[in-house]
Length: 152
Length: 152
Length: 152
Length: 152
Image 1 (cartoon, rainbow over the protein chains, first blue to last red):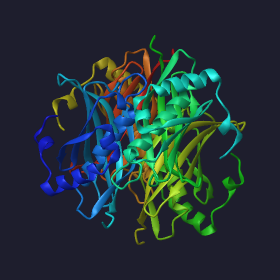
Image 2: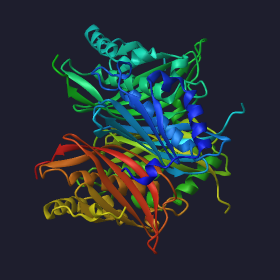
Image 3: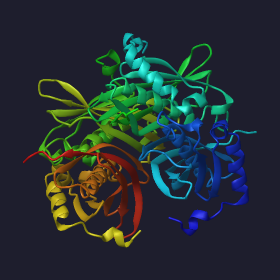
Image 4: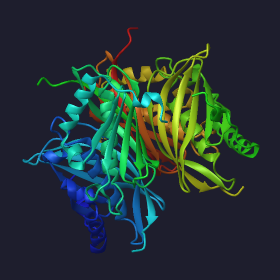
């Protein structure tokens, strides 16, 4: 999975566009999430484990797992749009495969099909231990729609 | 929709069990969510709008919307279990139907089918304005599994 | 559930449009399915049980159940479009709640939200016994897109 | 994608078990579908294009596409079970990415996670032209449950 395309960077303009939008998301900042990779059609988001994102057994809450997965997919779609376009999530489906444990989660959104109106992304979330061991904890599929960016 | 069953209360023991579990969820507290109704097979959760739960346009983030929907469905399932059982989300799918705007969101989880192993819930999220006007902003479907409650 | 709206008929022009399209679906005819109700935003399809639609235990195959559910939702969406528009399924998710047994299945597609581009439908499938007893055997949610009808 | 694991065969006993069950599915035979590969955690099913499986524009119906995808996933799960166990689809979600055209469809079910009770599969469906060109036409995710095989 550690292939060449995974680390390919999007253009500086695209990365700047994604980062600016991400910084406007109060939820991502409130959860402590940050973007760690912006490639063409692929975005990674890291969510550190902390008491503020847990469910009742101390694992990371499915809602937090989903929030970073949904966001990674949305920005993966956005990397392939022109600067006049913005993106909205139409729907997504996610399977929680294992307790979301570890030092942090890494959510990866990857564009599967980019159409004129609709984009479909694959969503993967890994639990990553402090020693680097990784486990797939959630897997999903997401549909997004391209919309015109509201005039500033 | 304001029918009689909607306001039926679960037993005091069940409500106490749900509230105790909910209070252990760091994420719900961190987002400012609270449980407003616990009925047999039906739970309501309210999420007040605030900058900490927004996406880039100032609406409530799909991740926050999903988090309260998933939680409402999980506790709706739990209301029908005995006290030895706990619940885990297997998967869910959610459509974001409209921008999640308003004074607060109300997420409603309703059990559609309660089986020995698996429970299926319907998830609805309404955007509620300060004047009380309501609009369905998200609709979903969730599968949960019953597990043995870990010994304390 | 047997409410007045359930039996409201769509206009004759809409019903004719839906029936004409349905008759072009080789699969529906091959499975023995027929449309039994066309209302505004709501379509019913009946699938008789027979050996040609079974899975390995003799129940109706999830694929046949899904096929009539998907089709009911698609035509429910179409009833709300003008005659220049056609509909395509973007995606759907379906839970199989119980073995699909009985004399026939009744699939019901109901529009939950009709937008300019996208429509979201609820899908329900009931197993109906010869004595009329009904049981919900599948429940789903579907996203559809409006497209221009190809010129004849 | 044409990697070594793709063509690895399951044991003769497993292949026989899958084929015997498949032959009991009236729907698969009625649609003209056949199994073309049975590997450990991976099953391929081919559906030839013909008028009996079409929707109103002559493409293969989403219901037929889903039926073979669901079946491929179910048997992929079954390849990893012991002979006392059988499998039921709990739910699936599928995105229709492109018109299902070509000489035939190839549905591929791949186990993503095999647990004691639940299995999660990835579903892919390719449209294959007579010249061998392939296009991903549908992508999905499926949850299955292991059940005891009914005594013969």
